[in-house]
Amino acid sequence: MENTVITISRQYGAGGRELAEIMAKKLDIKLYDRQIVHIAAAKLGINDLSEEELLEMENQVKPLSMSFIPFHSFGTHMGSSSQEMFMSESAAIRKLAEDAPCIFLGRSADYALRKKDNVFSIFVCADDDFREKRGQEVYDGKSLKELDKEDEKRARYYNYYTGRTWGAGENYDLVVNTSSGNLEKIADGLIAYMRTIKG
Amino acid sequence: MENTVITISRQYGAGGRELAEIMAKKLDIKLYDRQIVHIAAAKLGINDLSEEELLEMENQVKPLSMSFIPFHSFGTHMGSSSQEMFMSESAAIRKLAEDAPCIFLGRSADYALRKKDNVFSIFVCADDDFREKRGQEVYDGKSLKELDKEDEKRARYYNYYTGRTWGAGENYDLVVNTSSGNLEKIADGLIAYMRTIKG
Image (tube, rainbow over all chains, first blue to last red):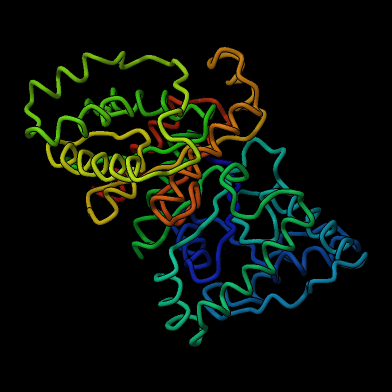
């Protein structure tokens, strides 16, 4: 599994970010989220990314932050500038994926890397009860309705740019249900699965 | 994982039956498919199922048959008799699940057993290219359109009786994509996942 790159997409409130962080820690590999991919995409036009720059980017975000980041960069109107941003983010993802094993959280990375053999893509979901509870506890009291609204935006963005259906099993290697709440065990299970498949 | 009961639902042409057979063999547990559940449901009204009867039922089906069984017992019209059949099949599934670790293929077993802690439910899907190829090779030249039509019936049946959405991640523990075609490895991977989660 040496060179495996993992992509994680997720419903809000399903614990996808926490699961990604646990897996990155267990595998001792980097986790790239929205902010890092965003910065990488912005820098990619100027020069290639050095190891120092990657480290610098990582220091700009709290890696274990559970804060709720509203998905406001892209509205319902998908203009040419967001098309460009999608393209440059995808290029940044492909560049980062070449460097070393890593995990991408969101950013349609499964699609950007769909032609690569060493990529393992996961979609994280959970039932409404679990997400509602987690919305209250982890995301500053967000209601299920608010979580669903964010998910609609994510789905719209993904579907628009990839021509696929967000969350549909056939776009990922595995769709995992975190409703049991045991993210540590699920992370171990996913690693065991990947090692068996890719090893 | 001693007492784990596994349910497998699947898209036509994704290799779900073959995957179920491989897993049953690897785990050395029984595989109950549509025919067995059907017979069990019919017998359940008369008397409890003995070990001999279970064996007898198993001998009535070719366990490794890959034949394409059209889903014709239930049409689009869901009358009271199919409601009764759903109820008695669900009862039969719960009865069979009590006896020993086993795998259920189809029959909305994930729903019938949703309240049991020892149940691990899997949905098997694949991309269109893979299913189309498999339809040609394994299912007597069925076209993707024919496979999709059967899936629509399955979805309608499942959605009608369970109030859930067939194939939606939140109804299963895992949704697995078999498009790689390596069912042996995927079976090993799923067993590794389950052992990690349940062990």
